[in-house]
Length: 610
Image (cartoon, rainbow, N blue to C red; front, side, top):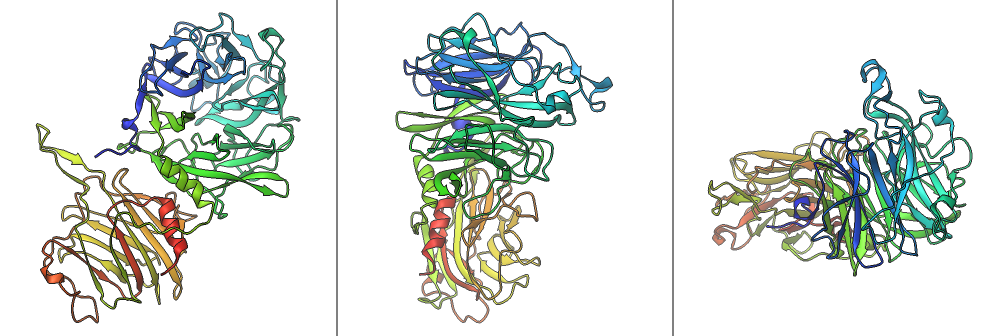
């Protein structure tokens, strides 16, 4: 079975061993031009340089990579492209112009206070191409950057500066804005302090002489974009979007377990007080120390890439989650409201990290580019997924019936057991393999129910489709006032539960559980809210054992619910049919033989109990 969310389903972009920031522009001859930081070593190694490659078939094949900077020169890294209306393409990047072999850093972790990674200092420069990226200017041009407090307070007093960039430029009122992340020091975690600035040029889009291009550093004052009050020292990898009223939106990473954002209403000279990003429903988002980018689409709506957990370090960039955004009015100008997320990309190896993405719109389709620091790939996005994300913000109810294999409602039916077809297996034996090993079917299932619990005491069976030996699946309350799902194939068992504090005794509530056999992830929803762990845990979603084969009980003897005297008519003659015992607190139930998207769960919740 294929799953277009699996990163290996994408089309690879040619690079060397290291691959970073595969960013694209569509040239005036219709090609995709992608620039990438690459090298034969790991990130930051000697020989790191920038290459360019072109595709004329939406990323399915690529021209041989050509160097923008040579592999045998000083390190050249972290390029971001900008296309002018003339067709000229500018490329902005770090360059170790003075060919330094080490810089000052904290000791420890760097022995004797010397860091031999030199890719995040030097000069911020650009080259340009007038032939759609086939060749580049021989000369590189230095961009002057205004000194700020963070520079003066570094180990060199600002004489040497630490910086880099991952954010693509934007254009506002005929001026180009290029992102830069200033760094205050190197130490544990590499960068120990950071903040964001914009480099504005009022004539780069019209001036043909690169020596005559003007630059100014924004915002005004002595500091860039930092974390919200009380936040940590890391505010970096700013991503910028231009709103319809001319406001600039920035979102960026922190080590606070949350992404930060701010708006500028005056072209980047001043910014609103930075705050932590939230969904349209007001719930705060969670995100680790990883790139989180927002893009404005051609339809005026937005997409946002992040990782949906509360870590404060570089780990767990798998899976990738995507939110949709729409502009709305506020007292201060336009703002973006964000949907709840969907899983958009994953790798089967949970340690593999994917990041530094770009969005390309071409011929009515939208594509994501990403890298695992090893391979870069292109992925066609599912339009239904995008429409669902944006549709969440329209607040319309919509009942999903596709894949529904069983439903029950206490108002219409007093039976306490439902007969369903066997749920799809997660994996099976592959008879086409010489070793007859496993074949991942990437199937899933979902439970959608309304319930009213008179108490939150642990051990209450809500749904139970297990055989006496425990094989099958069940939904029950726990000792910490949550609801957990149990998955058991007779060989292994997996469990996960909803976030604490969301259930209320005596209240009619909606609960959904999605068991997604692609990334092997379980998600819970309570009253239309995707569980993200809240303040209780880093992750609201959990992984189940990839060796789990299925959750069918294979039982010929149904369990009778307490107080029941019989099973549903005809159940005993159903052969391989599965039987679900329904607890007293359940008022309605739908079972699906596939994973439901977040948008589908929210639509079901908004329909209410019918």
